[in-house]
Length: 616
Ligand code: ADP
Ligand code: MG
Image 1: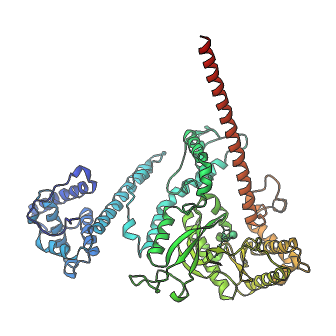
Image 2: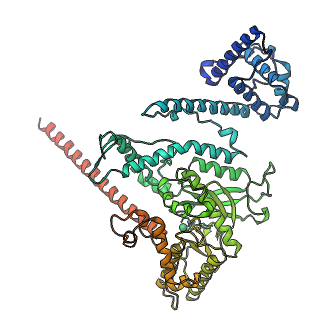
Image 3: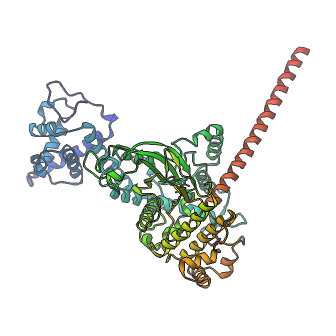
């Protein structure tokens, strides 16, 4: 690709159709404006140079990016503002005239010598342009919405390249914050809509501020409801996560989507096993970066699709030396020689439904309290992954068997794979244990729970035979994102539930002489059951619910957050999966029946027509 910044040739420069390139139009407009101002000023004979106005700053910043990215010589980058701008003006002046000879020689040599990649510069320029364009749109949006009761959003006109390129490397995190600040408004919107839906009483209508009746058939509400239903489509159906925009879907669109989501169900069953599932474009990019940074060599496929994460198997890169080719460590948390050959990648799902349950574990955890924000679901999901990382490291520091953390990138956590040759270790519930092994496992788990509580000051909070792997004759603890400190308002309640899960499992397996749930709780905490009850009361107190509501939780009026936690989560998940499967099979059967009937009536109709024709 030839560079517009590079060598001066005698051939006329090809003119580009300006109508095709927005950014050029914009640049010319700026330029014309600038020239006009310059001429006016020269006429007045005041300042001899152009004072940087917002538009000249824009133009200059383009130049700065170009020169920085091209690692321009010191001479060039330290040239005076006026000099830069004049060079730029001249450049623009000549552009389109096809007279490249007139370009200033100093600038040409600077860019010719130093420009590494035209594409990089172009992308950066485009990116900055997009950013400024979006800023302008937002300003217009704010201005319009200020006066009016009806708000407009120009989101669909936003340019997507905004800052993506500029910030995707070192300043990734900063950008994330900015990006999330922009999204905040829209998340708010989704939540407001949800609340609006909830606010319709059972009678089916309510009155708005103006006294207008809103029914549950209101098109606005239906749109929101449909959007929410789409969120609960099977995970393999790519719905996105509803972030960034105020999603509303008409009944017609929703019905079409539903029909589409049902189509090719047989295919989908296969697709469930493919690596695409649950791994959206942003995640794929993160995974790609892990490979590009020589941490991983290849990603092999799905180990498990759980209620809140997809677990992938990967091989680490044997050539990893601790830094990548640019000399960066890439956040790897262990020396290169300890990098496990096989890794498990936990990709936390970002769909709305799942992480709603997570709020409870994060928002009261003082380690994350300040950073918790209800609106920013993306931040929460990243925090959730971060929480798993911290908890794993804390558990490892007291000598518990947990997978080593390799690296964390946003909602993607890479850790040691527990198993051999692509075969994951079985969950405790699936492991075939002899009586002696069963007893060992019990002792080990009880000791681990004690240690976890007393030394690591943690409660697993989702401990069960589903989250313990049996490998090399030992128990390995996983899935610790929800683990909390005992001081967490629900800490003791979670612990009591963990005790219940463990005791139930070993009881079912017929292991004799084991603690009861209360005894195990007392052994771990040295607190008696009364204290636990006090903790329960405290929970009720902190949530401001009446004892009646909280202790008789099966009442239909009992709010969801006060209902007892399901025991254990995985069991509930599996059950719901089974139910879903049964439902979908039933629906499939019904569809087949309908199709069969339609076929039959069609054949009958054909026969009748033939007979009639014969008779005729
Ligand atoms: P979820 O929160 O979705 O339940 P988990 O962390 O429990 O996710 O992982 C789901 C399943 O993936 C586990 O039951 C286990 O079979 C497998 N798994 C998770 N981490 C590892 C690992 N490090 N090594 C091997 N298998 C793993
Ligand atoms: Mg799990």
